[in-house]
Image (tube, rainbow over all chains, first blue to last red; front, side, top):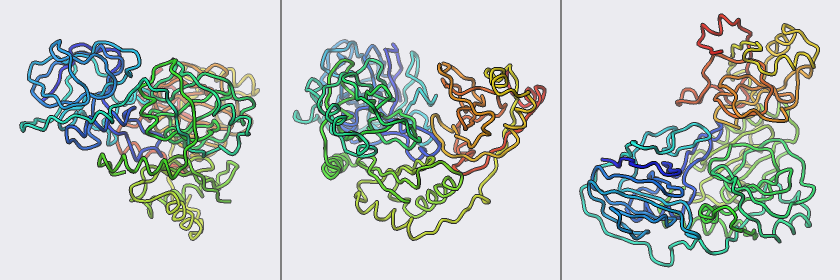
Length: 305
Length: 227
């Protein structure tokens, strides 16, 4: 049971929740960039929360269904169509053998990463206990023309659920990234923090799955490079230049720039849909508040984390 | 000195000291094992490094206060036992030659050393794995003899072949996979050090000992090395 890739598109990756338990050997966490869209897609299909999906960036990809199944497409609106007919996102859709699924184009303020989940999950090979592709580490490859994307057979009908309106993400909203004051936060002066929290930053086009680079007012006299240490998802390095880099899923396991804090993970899901030149700003969040919100999210989606 | 700090919504970082030393590495290796053995069900990932240990924990099972208290009690109630004699020694054959060591000639000139003198210095001592990172299986080895230490290149190379042996300041390392990098390249090993399965993951662990062994071009080629 499978899809066949008819057209490659700009960048499509197989991703699951990530690669865990291998950080001490230098492997990245990897995994989906937008956990919100990913979790809803699997939830709609009653999949396991960690089931693998296609992370479709910028569109341009075309898939042919070699068998029937149920799917859900969430995240960015990239002009998703079946056999040339526009389809709704954030809901379960039945796909018949021979159908052609296409994602045509980027639409301003509608995000740029679409998630295609299929009932039972994509069943590509497990590498170090995960299906997540990491180009930097040479683990897996981008989806390419002719490739077969396998999934399990599924014969029962399933409920055609959809995501309640209030939970559908709006990628146009101004983005505030909530930061937990931690790591080397205390080593930054009040003046440096005033710059960091006072200014709007723009997303640098050089951003990728490793890190989101920001452009804006520079922080002067940043603390020196330090002894390399483990870096967590969302931690914010301040480079020699005085500009922030938010470390994302494909980051290395250790790094040596001072970090002003760590962004709350569910804000990183929103960040994953913001294109270059959109603006973001930082606000503090307490650890207690961040943990409460994250636990609610994990509990709702049945994530054993 | 033990300093526990928040590192994110489900992670903490423990600082065991603030200066790089082989004793501190042994200590961190010991406590990393201890924490993995005792708190396994609460852990998602561990990242030991030169002076610190990052722990990611399961929010669904424990909160920050309880987790950091558990970790701190565990460390404070267990005296450090140096287990470095039980750790493995890895030997890495290396062809020290300009054909694969792109920066070797320059380094010899600056250090006023002959090739043989350089080889004796680089392969004549044991190194300790201080940290693993940068790329999968990339082991940072210290401490290199001061006479052959050299800062990173001002302009990193876009591609360094897998197996290349590099020097950066007082550290040395083997690039397990082809990647960009700014280390001074002095030779290459014919061994395949890429991480491809669970067995290959066991090759290096923090605290392990590594020795380099100089081999001839003929032996390098026989062992599958490429020029």
